[in-house]
Length: 119
Image 1 (cartoon, rainbow, N blue to C red):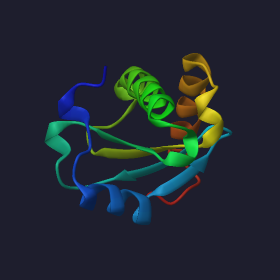
Image 2: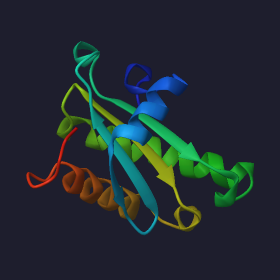
Image 3: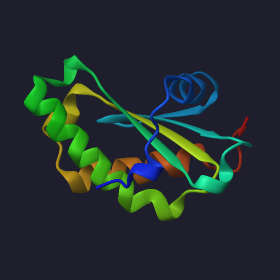
Image 4: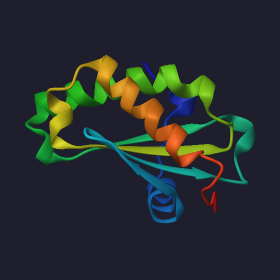
């Protein structure tokens, strides 16, 4: 599970990350990433968006649990000032955890590539 101190809980954090951050699209996920100057001392923050288009409540909760688990594995690769919002696409309902983790790692690498603007 993703420890509570790494969870993004405020809607202002979500909206700032989505609107000002870099975006990487994968087959089952969309990842928005933003490096902030404030709050770097409490570690990276990860937020999840699992909409009704993913499925019923059981499916959405299953996807959210999988995403929290794979996000925990990626925390070591993040800077303490990083903010991530992971939006699950409907195809994530049938994706296995290993595939979700591979896509998340790939998306994080894309938004951190040196040729891109970090904002």
